[in-house]
Each structure stands twice: as C-alpha cells, then as structure tokens.
Length: 443
Ligand SMILES: [Mn+2]
Image 1 (cartoon, rainbow, N blue to C red):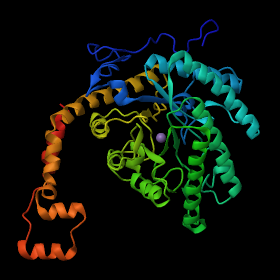
Image 2 (cartoon, protein in one colour):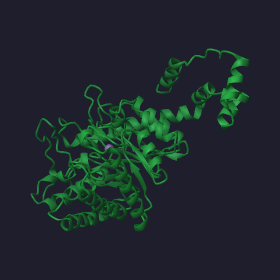
Image 3 (cartoon, protein in one colour):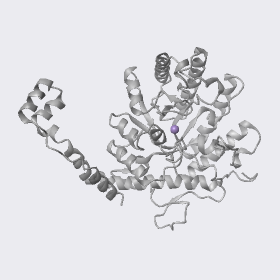
Image 4 (cartoon, helix red, strand yellow):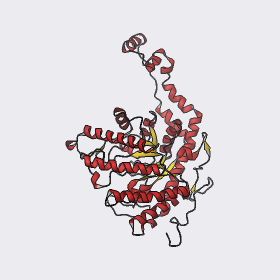
C-alpha cells in the first residue's frame, strides 16, 4: 500500500463476467455469472463461494523444507496489530474485487494472540470491530468461524482430547470466545476441525476416554450456542490424519457414527474437504455423497490434493470432473445453504505474484460454475437418475422387494422364496455405460 492510497491490489479492477474473453485474459469470469438463474436459483446461491482467511491472507509460502516466498504488501508495518488491520482491509478489498459474498476465518488468523487470555481476547475484539465495519461497508458476510486448536504448543497432545483437563479447559475457553465473535460477525456456521484430536501412539492413549471427552466438549458447544442465541449450523470437518497419525474424525461415516453414538446427530452436520477424503483412501466425491445421502452435508471446504504427493496440499479445485461430481450431489440435495463452497486452498509456494491469488480463485469459481451448468443438464434430463433407479427396481416392483424395504420380511420367508424361485438372473452392473453417459454431460 502506498502512503497516498488505501489500495493493496493496485491495478486490479472488479472481476467481471465475459464469456467472450480470450483464453489469456485471466482476470475475468468466463463461466461464473453470479445472477444467472440455473434450476430456479441464481448461480451465487448454488455456489455460495467463500475465501478463507488463513491460506489466502496468512499464507507465507513456507513449507516443511523451505522459508517463506511471499512478500505481501499488507505485512510491512512492523506492528502486529497494525499488520492485522492492514491485512483485514486488504482481504476485504480482495473479496470485493473478486465478487465473492463470504469469507471464513480462525480466531488466530484474524488477530494475534497476546501474553494472557485477556490480552488475546482484547486483540480479537478490536479486530472484530474493524471486520464488522468492513462487512457493513462491503456487504461481505461471514460463512463460518472456527478456533485454531492445533498450532499453539499447549495443544501438542490434543485440545478436547488432551489427557490434561487444564488443556481441555483452555480449548473450551478459546472456543467459547470464537463462537461469540463468529456470532457477532453474523456467521452462518461454526466449524470444528480437530487437527490434534487423535493419537500418535495407542501405547500412551486411552481412546475411549478421549472420545468421551470430545463428545462432552461438543455438548458444551451446543449448550453455549443456545446460551448466546447463535442460530448458525455447527459443523465437524473430517480428516483421517495429519498432523496426528490417526485423527478421530477420520471420514464422513466415522463422524456420523460418532455423532449418532453420543446423541449429537441433530446438532451437527459435516464440512467436507475433498482433499481429506482422498487422504482417507476414498474417491474425491465419496464423503460429499455419503453424508449428503443422510442429510448431513452442511458445507464443503472446496479444494483438491495431488495424487502424486498424498499429503494435504490444499490446491485450488480446477478439475471439471471432480467439481461436477460435487455439484451433482449439491443439486440433488437442493443446495448447501447455510453452508457454502469455501476455498480452503493455497496458491503454490512458487506462485508469488499478487495476481496469482485472483487467478487461482477465478479459475476455481469458473470450474464450479461450469460444473453447475453441466450437472443442471444432467439433473433436468432425469435420464441418468432413471438409469440408477432402474438398478433397484425390484424393491419397488416385486412383493418380496417391497417387504424387505418395509422391514416386514423375515429370514424364513426369504428362505422359502429362494426354494420356490431358485437362482436370480445375472444382471450387468454396466459401470462403463454410466461412465460414458456421465462424460457425455461433461461435453
Ligand atoms: Mn479445511
């Protein structure tokens, strides 16, 4: 930022939709036309894009092997609180120029920790007041907030699953405040990602005790939500490992099983990050589909990994096939609100231009917008859904199938049915046919 200007992204104008733009005109949307109606809703409502504060405004381009590569104009003043304010102004300029309607944040990304909890909360309150002002000026909303319960050394053995009750209490104090400031910013959701809620070795771990404690922690969060009048959706983000060797919130089915066991399934939904899904050994779209089919898909941390690397690379989603699979599920469940598509993504360490931040988001937004257009066609056509339904037709069309679905059939009855009817006919699964048809909708 120059002394005479409040602009950080100098020379970058608001990004506009121009389907005629040439392939090398990169600061333009070729697919994302926010107010265009698709299946009865504007594109921006289907997609509900959010920019994440941590990677995009706290990322420094460092990795486990190397020093920071980024040199950001808002990180220059030398005073921690001044930097936090400059960074926040830069972020709102970015959200506005990009044309997203939401952002997401952790408590510790947005404001620096102090020496004491009082000082930390004072810093946070000061920055939250500025965020509120900037929200008012720009109309940008908060999709969700969360607490960073993994970076500080106090959480090295876990937060809500720490063997020390004192650390558990610290995590609770931190989440209490993070929920309150999320509420103050009008956040529409609140996310729990338990990066250290797992174990490094079973030899020193009582897993049952730790999971009981995690459930107790989440119950207190539900209570506190009611106490402060926060009506946002609570979300849990599964991840199988990293930084712990095993994270308890391994994948969508594990988290749903946990919520059901502890009676928390009415109070939480899931925030699915496909890069975590692939780390759990599943296909990109697996967790999105799995929890959606149980009415538990709340939001998506939209990113991708790299199959050649295998860790959580948090790359921008640029693959049409992957985005189409996600949008197929999102359309089938009628949208994501109050959740959205949060870009939990970072530009590569080597992508050091400020402009790369825009190009990355524009590319991912266009990829999702194109995926939405393609999958709207698939949805409207009904042909694909009918083909899937036909595979299960025997449950609607035969007496025995209807009785199985109604829960009134018995083993004795089915045994008698087989004795009378013998071998079932061989039916092709036709996987290749489904793959070809899906590809035709991507044309
Ligand atoms: Mn995430």
